Length: 377
Image (tube, rainbow, N blue to C red; front, side, top):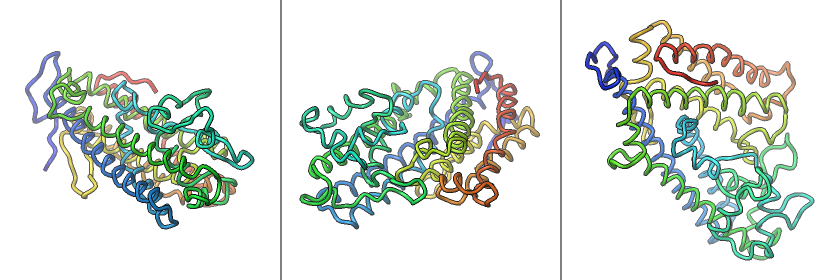
């Protein structure tokens, strides 16, 4: 369907806001809900794989669970544009996708064979959802007991060397009489924390159910459209600059420390970065491609900007695409490209991706000014 712009929406709403803004907000909420539903679908598949693995631990079962975990990351990366304005995901992010993790808080590591909750039967005689929820961040901000990256560590294990690939946890860590100790508790932990992640994600999806008049999403759409548009732009711009550029890319590029990369145990960080960049582009273009390959689209932020400043809209489109393409050009795994010699093609591609962000921050401020929105970057 051809997108419409402000030129086709002459009617004005309360507070002087145009119906085009209202339509843009609804497009965002509809697409975000679809994005959330796709994440739920992928985590449900992860839960099936995890449940099968812990029931009968095998090498193939562990690999299937790892593959299912990897599939959850791109759609989750896209939906993180809904952060940074006090929405439901901001309340859940800390227990769903926080990092870095102190591996010793969860399980054994090199030099600490009895480390973590799994091996601490005195302080944690039982492993339940309630116990893991209370334990989260107990004693330190990196003492994370739940979420995507706790599952990632349980599936891949510790990385002993930064340049030698992902973690190499053996499936026998989950097999009675196998490697390590407390295999039954490890199985319980993995199964429990995966179920918790699914429940949290279903909660986010319900919060954006537009068929429920009391949901956050319905209130977001019904609110003053300019206020909701402000939240959209703040979420998109903060994910692009504060999170993606600075925290997820610049920090590991500068420190060369694997703990500064998001998915360090699996070495899937590049997939996270591409998902984030695609999410930024999707919000601006009012578009989302679901797991079935169907494109959802409607009135967009791009339409609003184009109606007021066509050249600025084109500039924004080009810069977002340039950022996404530059990130996608980095050869995986991301941390290996960061650690490669400065003159190498891999390292230069990381630098090129970082450089692609340079004009974007200025353009985002121009977008905000054009739309009459205040953002903080």
